[in-house]
Length: 154
Image (cartoon, rainbow, N blue to C red; front, side, top):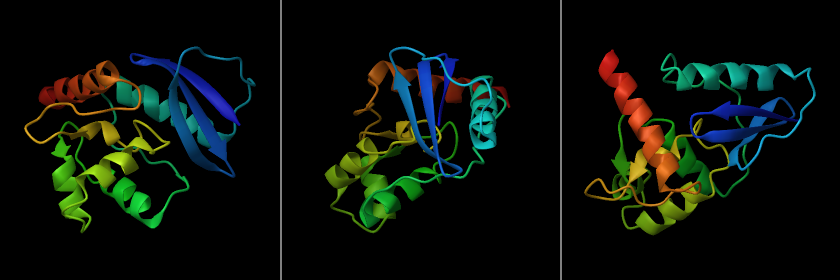
């Protein structure tokens, strides 16, 4: 099943498979969905609204996305990056035991199907430049600014 949410970074499509969030994409338009959502989609929408309102820093949702062991390791690491902070691709590569794997980490992060909830937007180039992002640098910048602004309020 799928659900949609209009957000400050555009329309978001959330996909559920067997009770797990399996994808979150920023899409060009919202589509009509069933009015009755499965509980995990309703909870995802609630938590995303809280995130965009600055009321949530950590998501608590069951997640499932397929990938290689290396990709899974890279995605697991993303969930350890604190809200409002960034790390470099090099720092991530070192942290997951692949110190020369900066490009592989970037590739794995680019294949992350659960954007925002699995926060690949928190990984930047060494020196703080934004690097890449599947949904464009403007979206990445907005997400980082939102987190930075909200964190400074606490």
